[in-house]
Image (cartoon, rainbow, N blue to C red; front, side):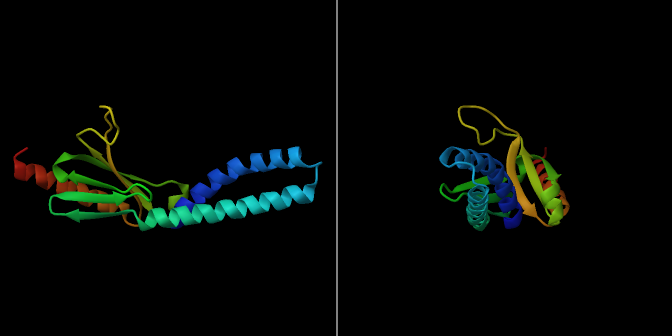
Length: 157
């Protein structure tokens, strides 16, 4: 998953940096193709190193666990966050695979809940949790849905 996040961030950074480098190269000096190319290569290397460092840290501090009747998700680099979702609140589990995830044989699982989401000031969201980069997303999503069904049956709902 680190590679997927890093490639995604790198593509976004390169898209932003290319225009900045071209503008800087045009404004600072008379047009010098060697300077522009070396500045572009250096910026791509810096963006790549930064993207991989951030993705590695994000992956290092992002994990989830299924305990008893609920799932826990921990994430965050600068600001840590723990999300606890009881199985009884889970409405749906969706498996998503984009082009980068498919390249690495991974998928993401989105868990939708019945209650309000993480947005402040009373805004609600159906997205309860996001589990990125799992190798067996279909099995995990099916397991989550089955656990939610069992939880509702035990509660008589």
